[in-house]
Length: 171
Image 1 (cartoon, helix red, strand yellow):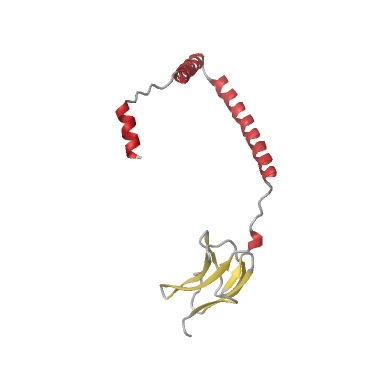
Image 2: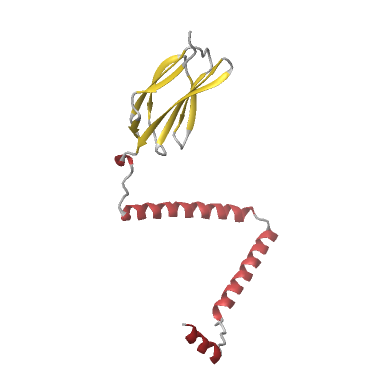
């Protein structure tokens, strides 16, 4: 008997979500035969029988999906591969919701996050010791003092007449 391994599909291209029939045959692979599928986004392998077929749904792909039959014949790893071109289905892409709906959902999400943040801060503050609370209050007061002192100041810019003339000449 000739040692051979074959892998075939019913077509060479498919769209996302379509099913593809895959057939394989290996005359000398007693128990070491795997079918590997690599879409570019994910890769997985399954153990298969010597002869058989299966039906796979073509999922998301980076343009092509490689289906390989991997076996060991006489101690050597043998691979048979088929590349399938995958077309993106336009109707599979989600249509965007109206802006008002998206803004409402965003507002609700932010409100929920704010409630969670407030609850976490209350729990954190309760768990602090007295000296830690005093330190945090002092740091906050220092930060606010620096902030308000920097807001009240106007920047001092001294420009000489030579610099102004140079600026006009450069333009």
